[in-house]
Amino acid sequence: MVDRLSHALMRAFARAWVMSSSESWRALPVPTDRPTAHAAGSDVDRVLLMGNGIAVSYGVLSHDQGLAGHLARGLSALTGRGTTVDVRAAPDLTPADALPVLASPEFAKYDAVVSTLGGLEAVLFGSADLWRHSVRELIETLARWAPNTSIHFVGIPLASNMVRMPRVYGLAVDAHTDRLNSITEQVCAEYPSASFIPFEPVQARVLDQIGRDLYKRWADQIANNVAHRLDSRVHRETIPTDEDARLAALVEMGILDSPRDEELDQIVTTARDLFGASGAGVNLIDSDRQWVMSSAGRSQGNICRGDSVCTTTITAADVFIIEDIHLDPAYRDKDWAHGDDAVRFYAGYPIEAPDGYRIGALCVVDDKPRSFEATDRALLRELAMRVQALLWEKRSTLATPSHSE
Image 1 (tube, rainbow, N blue to C red):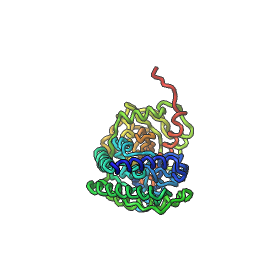
Image 2: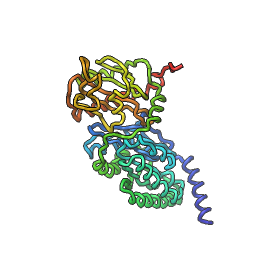
Image 3: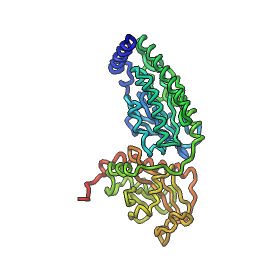
Image 4: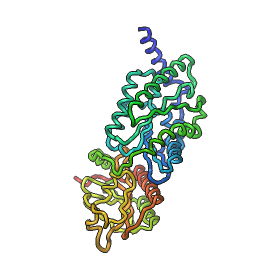
């Protein structure tokens, strides 16, 4: 009874300290850009950074300068491949909040998930038994929806290394942190898809010290473990898709049947010219059609979804390429593969809505067969990310009133 009362009092003190202390990281600025970072290269690995604490990247205004950017660059330096790190982080993110994020087939597109959860449970003296259950539930949920995706739990840093706290409170938090980390390590050892990454950060008890240099050091501690798993990952040709949710995301974007956009047309024209191709386009995949949002070099015309190559691209794990369509049994008999304006080559990269669902693709096509090298793949991806960023930025202004009435 005494222990329970003492624990309740400590938890009440903890909540008050977290919300009011001048030492709290909550007073620091946070990134305001899109929650993603990328290191260029071919055969891109996709990583989801999920959690609170250091995943939020307090103290910097860009995810590129925070943990995500340094992790992307650190992983690429170790693997020799490109890396994209998407961020799902918030100061108050809990395992219960994170669970629905992983319970979707769309997250099979990730090669790895890096979790920095646990900081709140440490400083607020969350239940150790509940933490054990939460870690196990996160691992099993991801394994059910994305069996080829590994999950890495970054150890909860000792509070005494991160901020100044009242001495007795700090000692109690550190002891609870050690207990939670021990539980995480034990649970991860039960699952081949999971790993625990011990984390002993360079001390950052002065808030002004938190910035890109510290995030680089912290990312370096995490990258080695994740890179090892990425190097042994199972290559996936396609990823599963929740079609109803994907179509809902496309509608939410409000860009179907919108007017032509000059900036988008410029990117598409640039793609055609850089690859020396006969055409390029941004195509959105609706329920039963491919709608051409922008095109360069070829006549603009919508086609049935069943005849579309981009409908395959949105299920691809990376760039989708057909070097000679006449040799591909799925597409060689299509009408557009023959005649004076025939398409013989295709390369496309998927474009996503903000919630991760793939809504279309940037593609380049040619009237003759050709190869597509690693540098070409990387360049096409970079252009597709420019298209995606533009659509996210302009989705509200591109939208037009519905014509269905």
